[in-house]
Amino acid sequence: MGLEMGIGGSLPHLKLMPAGGVRLDSLRDWFDAGSVTLGVGTSLIRSDLVDAQDWSGLTDHTRAFVSAAQAGKQAQR
Image (tube, rainbow, N blue to C red):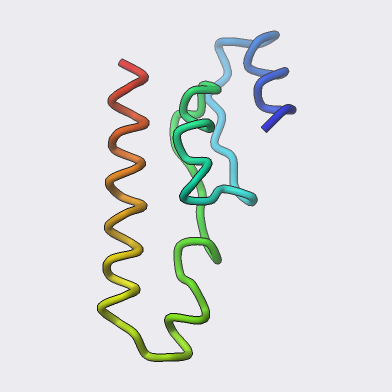
């Protein structure tokens, strides 16, 4: 996140989308740093939940991501 904050401070006209290292507990930080959207993969589709075929757990986890992303975007306004 340090690189994004540095680039965003120097070049505020850039629209940045980080991908990699984005976790549920860091979503708000990325939006606070100026990200316009986020790329998430393995932290969204948790292999432990898929391996256990815990579809309801995966759904709950995904909903938590959506909720955190919406809150982060709302705070930017």
